[in-house]
Amino acid sequence: MTTDSIDLPAYLARIGYDGPAGAPPTLATLQRVQICHACSVPFENLDVLLLRGINLDMESVQRKIVSERRGGYCFEQNGLLLAALDAMGFAVEGLSARVRVAAAREFMPARTHLFGRVTLDGVPWLVDVGLGSLTPTGPIRMDTAEPQATPHEPRRIVPADGAHVGNGMATWFHQALLGDQWQDVCEFTGERMPAIDRQVSNWWTSTNPQSKFRLNIMAAIAAHDGTRHAIATREYTHRRGAEILEREVIGSRERLLVVLAERFWLVMPGESVFGIDGL
Image (cartoon, rainbow, N blue to C red; front, side, top):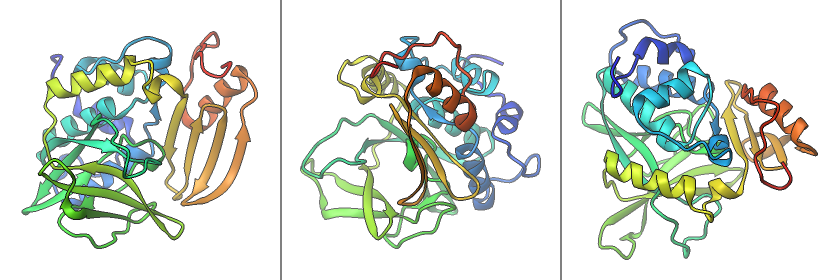
């Protein structure tokens, strides 16, 4: 295995993929890979807070996520997913986006998100396993604004008002239905995100003192029962859609390590200090 290749059997075993070996690149296969990944690999930024650096070469990503059974954020997780889908025979490309979770339309976030577009029989599908507590658990058709069911929240892809936002390029919003409200998740134009752009965005995201990944402890994972688990620094939540099933204020670093291990399968060394809010 070279630094740029993926060990596909090891990846599929890591995500608990239970489809047939050598499955054809169909929508059913894509759906199964995405739900298995989203429910097996936690979104997390712990290495950013531990100042370990985030390496995006395939050897490093596989060592962390597959061999060490850790998680990661979008550049790691979606980079790995896109490499796996390519190895499985899918027509896939990485696109850039601006994450808009809890951000007003008037605010312009940086374009620091990577997701995938898979084309099947001429139809484009959005695939993404790196959006934290709003990671979609099924592919989303990109050529319609109609709501679409996923194993978790309904999703849709809608054009911006007037179809353009200030830059002369058509703009779309990926949205999730939480309760009775459609919430913006990402904004994108369809611009590709080659490796060099991922490297630059990854450097900013992981090292800028004002990056949310440097200011918060994050962990999230979907469950096959349609619920989600998440940590936002000192708050742990277990929810179904907009309904909170369980909430806990994490009172100590020791308790944080227990919750990470029990709910996210993230076993961190006992001496780990994340440096956020006394944790």
